[in-house]
Length: 126
Image (cartoon, rainbow, N blue to C red; front, side, top):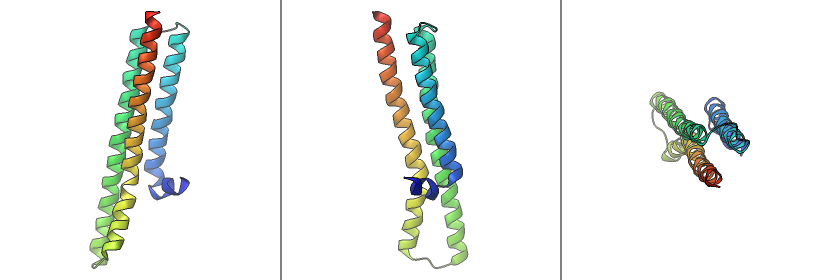
């Protein structure tokens, strides 16, 4: 797993990991505050929209990382001239790591938001 982190580029993968951690912290903190009756259901739901927004941000950062990687790869190919198809496909595969990680974070954020929102709604009804 650490190998994918390094191959994806420490800068973008690090930013994506920070976004992921912030998203989890915000979701858990919101849930705990709602359980302790420190915030209302509306405020907790607003925090869940922030969780989803962080997931979307992660996906966009991942796509931006991929595009930047592709630009660098195409620049290197232009300088090198003739490149084998295997080498080209390997570069394309590596460039997708940040997009995949961003998509994973987005999916986690959406699932986490749905689970916590339904749980909070259920607690509010009781």
